[in-house]
Length: 143
Image 1 (spheres, rainbow, N blue to C red):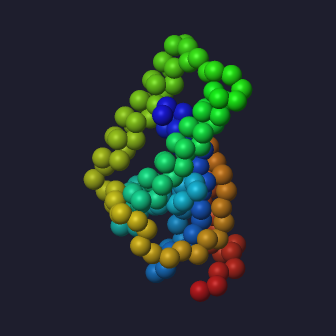
Image 2 (cartoon, rainbow, N blue to C red; image 1 turned 120 degrees about the vertical axis):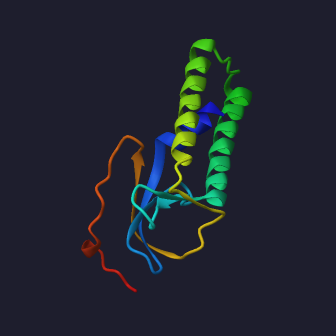
Image 3 (cartoon, rainbow, N blue to C red; image 1 turned 180 degrees about the horizontal axis):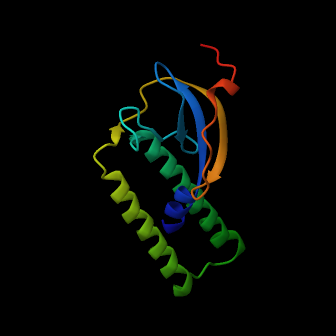
């Protein structure tokens, strides 16, 4: 579980999209978009719970299958405390910070994304990298 939480947080895919009847916005999530900038106020997020759950399960199944395969076909993995304790500490810090950020009253939680989008650009990034917002005029938008 700690590997799932850490990898889910560290690596993500950003999407520059045009939602129907909304301005161009940055969304994130891999393989499904699960978080978006909020449109009602600055510094808010829209979080899509079904996509978040599916993404989290995909990450978990990936790590479970990888570790189970290594255990079965290569050699037994014996988790040492020097590795497991830092993994649990890092994952707990991520959970605490996520709960803190998620508890902000400006965020909007939706069961699933209920609007269509037109994807203009995508890419991958680590959570510490800052991506400059794309210029809308650089894209040939078909409306």
